Amino acid sequence: MKTEFEVFNGRWNTDTYLRSKTASKSYSTSANETTRVAGYTTLNFATTYHFGPQKRYMVSAEAINITNQLYSYGDSIYEPGRHFNFKLSAKY
Image (tube, rainbow, N blue to C red):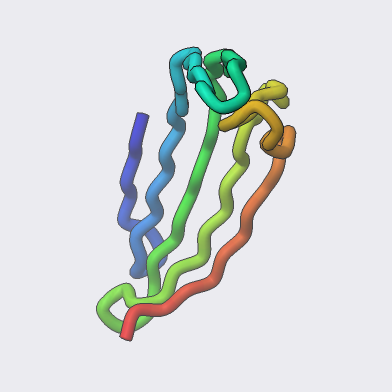
């Protein structure tokens, strides 16, 4: 669910979204081994404020994996639990 507002001479966006991956299975002929990775769905939220001349500057904050689900992209690489990202960027 996305929203967008004009506020304080800038633009404020929010985005609440799910990120999912289905379960997968792979087979290695050299190791004669099958690897299974479970599927997952994470709940995430992001907000960004665009400001300045031509709205070229942005401040962003993200809350990723809000429900703190344990998941991985592969058989040995686990993703962090709940975490937060903060960004300040500019377009040139």
